[in-house]
Length: 407
Image 1 (cartoon, rainbow, N blue to C red):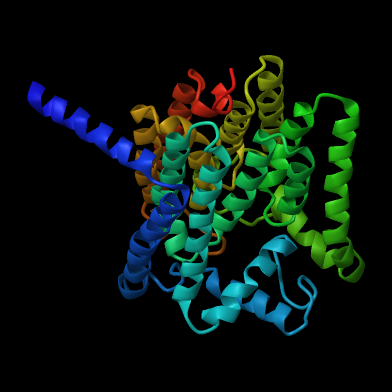
Image 2: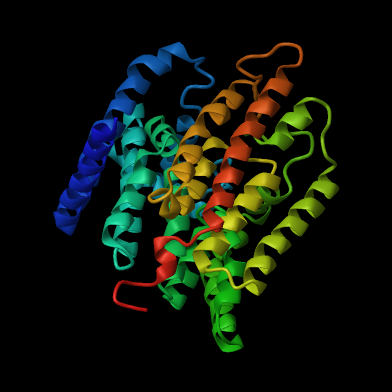
């Protein structure tokens, strides 16, 4: 047994030495190879097996929406006015290349396109953080790329990898103290998918003086004006619908997703919307102010904020967890307990979706009390992430030590 442990330790060191000796280009090439093999296999399985095995209403439910909106753009139409749109404008323009590359006829094109953004996100994290620790930055990118959340969402034609890439772009720019660029990324990101708006209070508090803070506000407002103003002028009522949908929901319409709050709603134990908003607001105020006054690092602050948001936000879909996987990846590369929890959480959260009511669709599996099974599964997945976050915040990650050569 002792000899086996020695060999195992030796093998690990040999792998680490081999990775350290690889050039930056070869590491990026390895990411690309992993994407082609693993995501390619997922796309093949999805298009040859899952499509026929899963109800057609559940298989690729958003692809027709992507096609309709992107084709409207290509035909010179206006989002919101000429096609029903419940998402911010930029994400729809980012989907246009997939439509042009054959997405109008082939489902797999969309999966390949979203898989490319998963690769970009891994490369972004590695290239941005390699000056803190070359090997751990590469492994952190690998954690994102190999995460079952990233793999299945991208490989089955869901656009959450784009959302996660935009979010993480803003985070690394904040981490690297590229203040104006981070403000721009947040401003544009808000109008891609709304999640980057969660970063702005952290970014605002991070600034050292009021001049920098006001500059950040001005940049975000300028980005908002340049992107949103044309739609506000051309189709105000239609354009503001998605804002109400994102922040307040639609009366009588289920939130979708697989959060514990959604299952409570299914079971007839819905929390009143006003109380839900107060709870979320109070929790987020804590998530912003506690790290600020206790002088937590930026990466710790954003991680805690995302965890708190996902705990109290009622509309949580599977792809959203990619954000927390990406944030926790810098700890997961050195702590096996964190790594196993963020990977194992995928199982109960995936199973929970089987019992979840969609937006206008019945649960795939439904029986008396099935909502309670979904609630317990959702709670199990949530608690695994909560515990992973607890373990992570008790220790310093490699990005907290500062760039190589400092300190």
